[in-house]
Image (tube, rainbow, N blue to C red; front, side):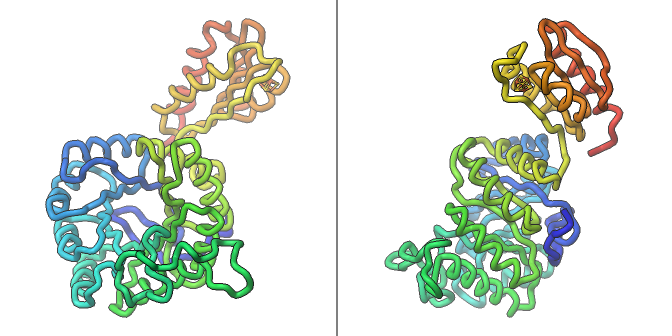
Length: 380
Ligand code: SF4
């Protein structure tokens, strides 16, 4: 797609976000950040599946003090997620973190915000302003309440996207106004290494909020649907919300929030990007859904192949088709394809019929071909 929104790039460690950089995939650790061994183990698992940037919650000083040791043992940039405490932010910056996720409005005291911003500027560490539906300031209280709770805040009474009558002030208006106020705080301190997110659970609200802010500021956008749900429903919800925005050229980095293993978030993130031809990292599996014509248990075969492909990080498109009707067409279009038939299967490689194997041998033969194509491919 060439309609990508032009943004002012930032660097999160050595990873470029925005500008002409490819859309990156992020996740968040689900361990206690104070437990260095567990956190590092999880980050390494995420590195294995291609996570570009990792974020960890830093709720207290002990967690902040764990940052240097975690940083030493990982290879991808680390973002510290901080609320309220400027001392924790300063400790994380000192500890070598690559980015902060922090809303200046939550720190409340101007002098303390200034200290954090100065320290970030000195190390050229960007700050992500994360506007979340769940922690919006009260209606009419942006910048005045300085992050106090939403008790009696009227936010939940605001109409969602599509529900507002005429010029009625909506949740989208409130999210965008909050983001602009937070941005203004940083800009007033002459700080522009900024990235923004505006997340809600409601997909149309999230999409509209991002569309609106995209036209108003030059900063890169971190896309996400907050509290999206379990692996299955959350992936679908995120794919729809993020997919709509990415298709319009909006979004520089994404996180799929799932109530599940963090590796699932990364895998879902790549599937979204691969579906839009925005990233090609790793394999792409084309699999037929099976039907009454299937000559083999194509569902079982596809799931086994899907599992086996996880260890291949090269850009290889693999097709698993259940019969000789539609199978050869799709199988030929892939780098490696298999079209099963009664008791046998045809394997295609780069569009050419490569071999015919018995049903018993089809899985091993398919994987041999995939590995050969992957070995011949350069780094993806
Ligand atoms: S490829 Fe064959 S088995 Fe698979 S869905 Fe199509 S017709 Fe059915």
